[in-house]
Image (tube, rainbow, N blue to C red; front, side, top):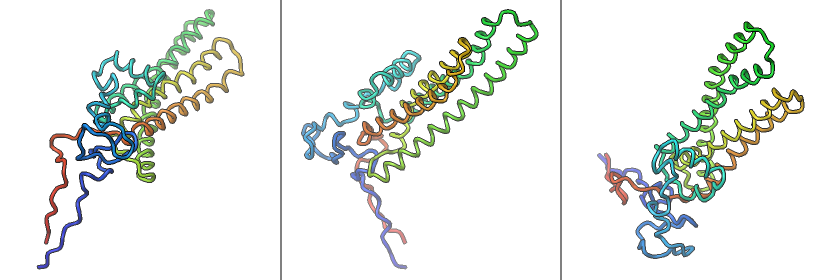
Length: 262
């Protein structure tokens, strides 16, 4: 029986390996170099590319809570660049962040029919009791169905975006792993808040002011919110394309030996 070598196993020093240490400025492979030195390519101190130093995590990643969720969203709205340079490449905590933001956006959208009902009742105090109960029932139905649809649509759109930026990374030689795409898209989900706000604000204004010109603004606001999400994703890809991730203790730092197979 002839012996043939097994297919070569990819080196742990391959820059496409998600645990290979890269220079976060230029992408040069720093694995195995003295951590007290500088990047041979651009001169950036190697210590500044170590994940434990460069990426302590967003407030939510450091300590998940309602307060840290609000703080993370606030920073993503006002100063997304600096925060994306500090986010920890961690699919688990980022996934929970995405879930909470999508859930909160869905709740806001689901509560809108009830808000419409209250505003409508305020501006139409002469409506009969039966009509009010009918409108309340419709508002409840719209809230339940609308909230579920919003959650499903946002989850699908975010998932498509994750796949899209990983494909972009493969085509353009960027290290956009599953963990990086999850981290970037989860923090970019703040854009869904923007979409909800820009969509419902002109709708509420239309209910109150009864001005027909306000309604076409709603879909335009929805588009701007989607654009905001895309801009945050692009910014995240730019800030995290050479981002480093802590290597688990169960993952060896060097290549595994190649063993022949019959």
